[in-house]
View (cartoon, rainbow, N blue to C red):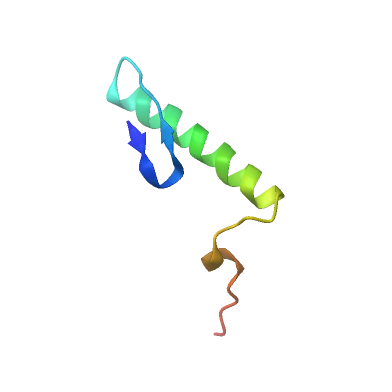
Length: 49
């Protein structure tokens, strides 16, 4: 499984395992980016209700 927007790639014995592993990698990547202040623009945008 490849998440090209985040330059992540993972493989596993089953599709479900690959999806799980990819989700863990993605969450770690997003958490690290947020700690560095690199959250995507849409996260920093304030919305008026």
